[in-house]
Length: 382
Image (cartoon, rainbow, N blue to C red):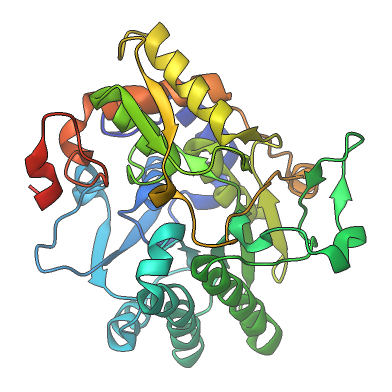
């Protein structure tokens, strides 16, 4: 396996022990394969010996940012979820596979903040794109082993007063979110993902398409877009003394990307069609404490000096009352059915994430939404 991958030999040994019998030699489609989570999942599937078809959004350059090291090990399909014709070409080709393919549907516009700036693109990619893929599979009669739609913890939103008693709380009164917890999406992104989840279940009910939904809780790690909170903390700390963030009070349940990939592989291998599975670290942390953990780790490991400070800016807050205040998963269902557990601690995950950003500056410096000290040209997109 290429040195580009974050999967070390121990990780790979565990993957092969748990999943080679399931995915080795099997046909697999990954949408969003060049994205953050999609690329790590693609890495894992190639390492397991799967016959991987990578669905990548077509651009004029045809550049692959995260899976170029796998170019000889898989088949890339440059297509677009919002273009039904390109999806039909792909599904028609998969009909010639010698087995029933697995589909991991991770392709999406996945940034909450961007969904307010690009609402139509978000709904088209996340909802209509999912519909296009599901309908094409039905129309062409493609028989699948499993269809995993990647949902999000953002679908739960905040607790509504009228359904408080439908939620689960621990002994200290903290909210725990399960598969059947009421949903209350607070962003266009979350609403579009709710629709994608329900469409997956609709096609299971109507056509027997073996769909499952995986709601992941706040994945983070190498290759993530630096505009997400973990990346924006790390990249600012690597570049300047002041780290600008939005609200510091919200609580999030952060799960390292390799644990997230194992969640997808586990649910697709063992999950029941027509069912929903949630997973994450199982504990949460405030944005203020998450930033403090990252900054302290970077200082202790020598990635930046000890003069870093966090400040709140209004421009980085979510609009109006749309922020989600507390996300924490209860993954008992997945654990009881399959034995899945998170394996990477926050301390280890944060260190691995910082190291990647520090060693791959050219991969993110042109994508940040803040101005590095002494670099006015960055604002112009150079």
